[in-house]
Image 1 (cartoon, rainbow, N blue to C red):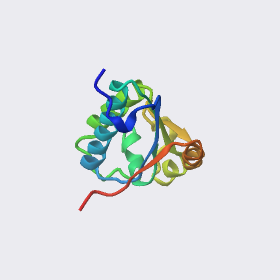
Image 2 (image 1 turned 120 degrees about the vertical axis):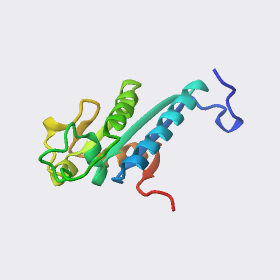
Image 3 (image 1 turned 60 degrees about the vertical axis):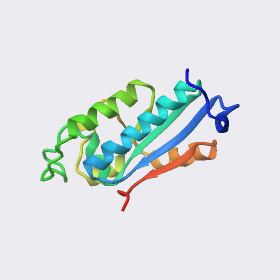
Image 4 (image 1 turned 180 degrees about the horizontal axis):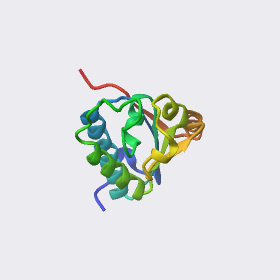
Length: 146
């Protein structure tokens, strides 16, 4: 276990809702690495990370097993398999990944086309709000830095 920075003394858990809505593949993958790095840092300091990822908007395409016959069929996401691997690793580590059912419908992505690491949720945004009311930090991931 690494040395815990003084700002984190007394913490037993790190609770965060990560809200992904952007649709650019390289940036999405980069921000997933930020989530993984944060998860690993907290774990290394002996702090239990409780993370929930909400995927909605244009980011919804990143949980589709296939983009064929979806609203994103014409898009070429060269790193989709890397994104899937990163999301699967986070899920395997215990990160809950919810995808908005409305966003799935808007993207013409059927629930049986959702990769197994993500769970379609009818109230993904509301779950995020509920978790914020329980003290979870809200981390909005929606735009590439200028």
